Image (cartoon, rainbow, N blue to C red):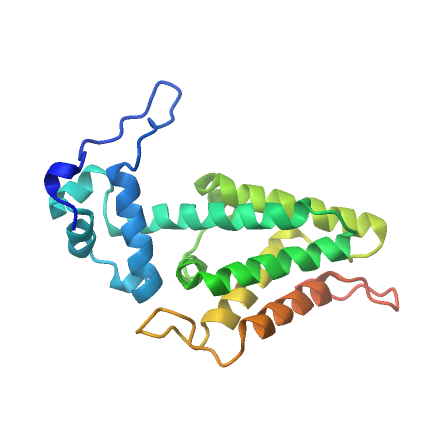
Length: 229
């Protein structure tokens, strides 16, 4: 455990442009690091401020210098998770290919990432249980807004080319998110290492999500649009 004398426990005051100063690892960042690790092993319910403070090397009251409380730390972890998922999706969609190939690649990439990072799946399960409207979510996380914009552009391009049926982003993303979270986390997580307690392999889950994403958006061969979800 780091000693208290090694920690810069002063708040990271925003600069005039609203950003935070760059440091090796601010205390706030280390709190989020530790919180993400704990959530990965024990879920949000296992996150205790006392444990976070002890592992960071500060006194428990000092946590409140940086966060209002446990839920605020959870939100900070969720922001980090969304940023990583957005980066994974960006990389998949930036590769060349037609709309179907890019959709399949994006679905596979996100599903694989969440299988490999069970703590991220736990955060998605947490947020699925919370009530936020679309505008609130977009305001809450710019990365989530970026994910929505990328998917919306892909769905629109697929509809124009005739490959996809008309599917609103607000319907597709929750279906994909819920399917991945359910596939990875429906059996829970092993206490020993935090890994998903599922019988399916990583490859089987990723293939299932890819097929589901394509089946949901593809235009029927008979030309009839299925009812909206």
